[in-house]
Length: 209
Image (cartoon, rainbow, N blue to C red; front, side, top):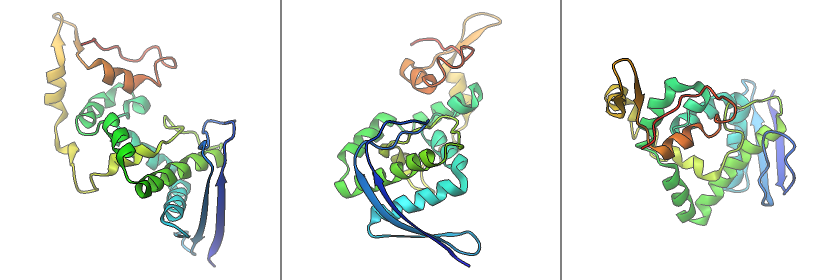
């Protein structure tokens, strides 16, 4: 038997009481999510934004950890969750995806596209607010511009084919016979570890430019 659930969600300004904050602009999504006998969601909405909201909310219900990991990877922030071992893959990703550029691209996007990205972010933020038992590793709040880090397409920008070894060698410099330290741009260092700076005083320290 199919399980049908209608979601009419009014997103209003409120004070966040948990890890995730609801958006601070009033929005309404009229979405119907129907799960069939196999649990597969079928999403219907009155507008494209309604459909995006329902699709992403259902995806979060199915596997939020995968969503978070995918976006940490594509935003070049995986080291915030997995530690120093992911620093070099983060740096490689930052050579390809620039959050500053993504924010600017979002600001220049037409209103209809901004509405879809906003619905995407709202769905994830409201999912987290609705499920306080879900504990994100890093991304406790999603912003609409983040959706653009996948805008190159699933078969484009195969950045993982770029080996990490030469990149790591380029940014390490010898400071002594038995010691060395990486030279990583200050802005990238701050962005990578800003969420871990206070929580983990043992985090790796990088040389300034």
